Image 1 (spheres, rainbow, N blue to C red):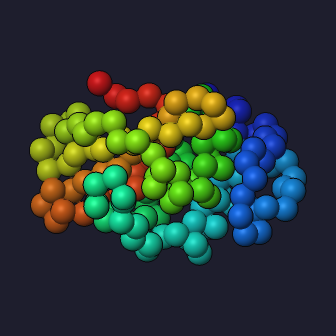
Image 2 (image 1 turned 120 degrees about the vertical axis):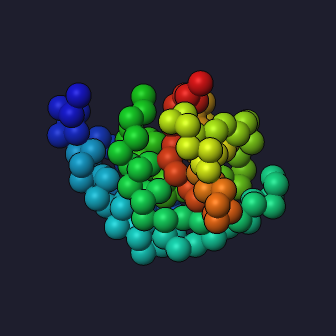
Length: 145
């Protein structure tokens, strides 16, 4: 399962800031570290108000880590999407909310549809009801039922 992490992957999106320049090929592991460091310096601690519903969404280091480690059909492209997560989230379409599968009634996941490399994917927000915090949690290629 982890053998793909050592294979080189090209950068797959044109991005603002320093990522607009051509990027060399990285292994998935190297790509994750680069994006994690970028997120720590650029979006962790940011709160964004969604135009779709007025929710305030927080970006946390744990959400970035979860998203980077989340399996996906197009892992390199999904990882690159994290660098564009705020505009992607703002332009996304709300699909559904779902309680936590493990039975924790204080957690609800909210799914927003986006496209990654032409394929349906979903930004997942995690709402903790006891303190009403909604945070970026992950990007997935299918919704758990």
